[in-house]
Image (cartoon, one colour):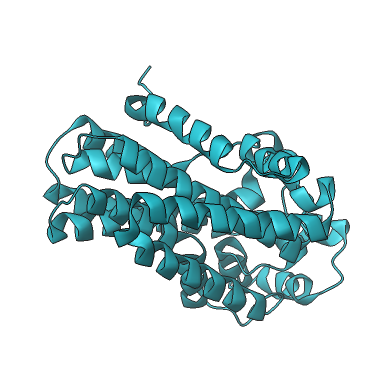
Length: 313
């Protein structure tokens, strides 16, 4: 059995966890508890992993800086999830109650703001030269969420609209994570561009697969109920493709446009989507982005870190 893609940086990822827990300690015990509740919920830690692997792939040899930068990225990412869950009225995140459901909305907003501040402070202390990357990515996340809101329950959404949304929501932060790892290693601009493009395309593929799992996934593995995106009226690629189907599309459009969605509506919509070629098309599109991503690594010399990135892809 092959080793997990992250096996070469397992020690570094453990240090990421330690730094996040330490840096989110507050004078207020409840605020500390809330921040640590979010971090302890887990996650794939893809953003710090991309930062650390990119650093190693271009010859960086002192892991402490990319570890701290990666921790900052994950703290900021986690803060966005708190606010997203409030915005979407989500109840479950990674198999646990969302922060605002476990505590209160007002306290969760404050905890998210605090995590943003602590993440930016850690980043500025370790690598002030890359703050622009995270600022750009954070702005793109906000813009992506705004566009997504505009297309909620809107059947006129197109694939290009969806790609625009997930570029901001996901891909730009993946890109920024890798670019930051390269930048703190002081590698040349060609490597910065190559690894940035790699992670950008991985981010698109990741989000497409994540959204497809909302239709096909096992809640015990995904940490959230199937059909959550449909309940929230999110314009995901599986829905977009399925609405194009001549047989099942018209009824799905009716269901997607409803703002008072019932669980029976969700069950019917899931059956309609699964009756089309939507899932296969989504996975094929994700595979195209993975292939595109891997093509950028041809410019990167062979190493255990490059092989790990290929394995991740």
